[in-house]
Length: 224
Ligand SMILES: *Cc1c(COP(=O)(O)O)cnc(C)c1O
Image (cartoon, rainbow, N blue to C red; front, side):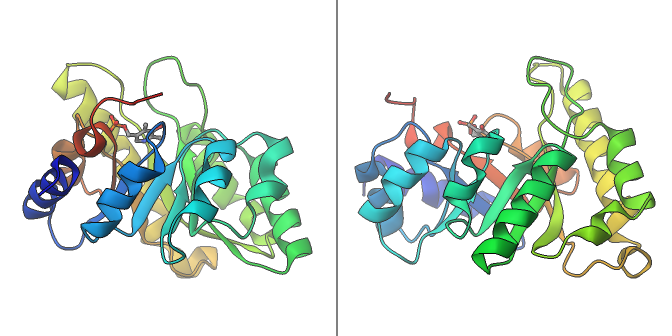
């Protein structure tokens, strides 16, 4: 068995059945993706548009691609219709653009709203206040070709487990705030909470995650 297949086996044996595993293949060659595919993996995550567009035609059609990186507004059009889920919608401007382009293309795009709670570098994402306000004011109701399926978030990059747990709890609370009131907000299928990566996914799952995004534990260190 290949190292990648072994790593997937181990992960699957540890993961509750109702948690989806997104294999994050960014910076890894198509050969590595193929190894995971042959081990049964169908759900993959990429964080750069260029890399995603290069990989898609080289790999099997039944792969479900999630986009998980910061999406620049000038690249939106290029990935419309190519993803199963855009997990990293980090601003209202971006979601409105995805909506426009999806409508023009005649497709419906499923997305998650990225929530920013972590203390550091990446400032991308809705703050908790912006997130709640967005729904409370009903601004999501203008979307015609986007379905908001849930939330995505990252915990602070720290060894302080309390801090990490606290970040996941904050994201979970915000998720429930909407998920428990879907009929009030006029939402359908708002049921995904994507949190947890190689270093912190067990904690994320303990705090309510039902989708984890794991790269280095499957593929090893990034190759380019
Ligand atoms: C790279 C990345 C991951 C995977 O990180 P690993 O630590 O390699 O598991 C998960 N989520 C996002 C948004 C990423 O950019």
